[in-house]
Image (cartoon, rainbow, N blue to C red):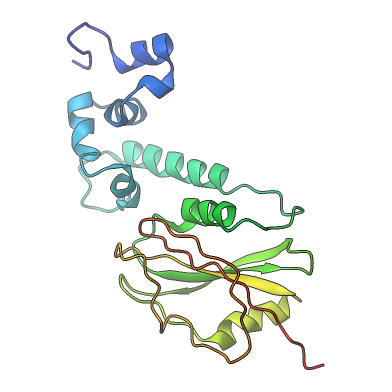
Length: 205
């Protein structure tokens, strides 16, 4: 039975008090059509761990339809959270950081990417450049700048997730290039310490 001691189910509570009143386990219960007690086991390590589970893997103790519901709902949430108006200039590292955490924070392998900007700091393109291991992802400055030249970018922001849980960026992640970067700011979050900085491209032509 999926009701509490008062006889109220999560669905009843949703319509009575609103979705904000539901616990994590009750939300998962409604999403996956499971009992609250069984759903509580799925979120016992917290929602970030829940989001990083490989739900479509063969070892999951849920049905294919239940797994699909979770994967689809998480992806919709990420897409909504990462929506920005690319016509507006990017100025705030916190805004950029939250957008990137929503899109890349759930991955279990380190990833390095960049957002390429025009001369007014508007987004030209966002690229995922390299996928590494659980604890490292090394990419050269050449790889980052090559795409900047292809996109005719005036500047760029490099981002890097840390699924190991250590928020400090690895010194070897991006090989430094003398005179190529000017630091603008940082954004740190658990498991996703974006070191948010731009690299100004000096054209030799």
